[in-house]
Image (cartoon, rainbow, N blue to C red; front, top):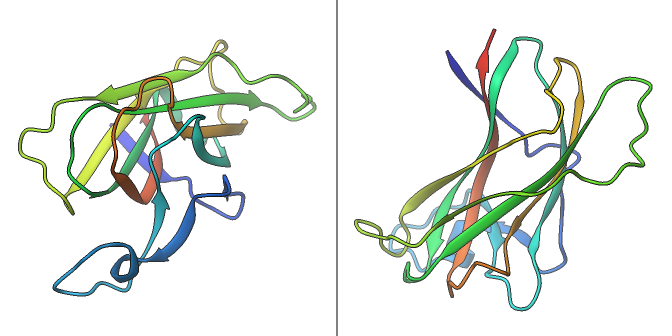
Length: 166
């Protein structure tokens, strides 16, 4: 069975131009929503993202994926691209280790999507060594400036770690 756990937690730290705000202050809504979203603008010269840590659950088996769910803020066009650099550490392993090679995902086909629609994208993770239940994962999740050619913000509602359970 596939399981999703939210990973935006007390370790969440965004880059400087990313901020949390009520949906009603970032979107032009007829029907105001006061729930919070993370305003994630498009990159303009460098990757733009956030840092987070999470534990690999005890029931983890395989198929690690980062899922980003949010609201399109603007006209969906061109290529939306995201990436993840990660590092998994067990007890007694140093965190002073470089991130592994990045994993990326992108979309340039927007049939059926419009401004203020919910959108979801998934990044399949390929850790160099298999994740182990109880490991701590350090992630940098970002909009990939090398590939992202959009001009819309993405209002992140949640980020998830998705996996197949044992």
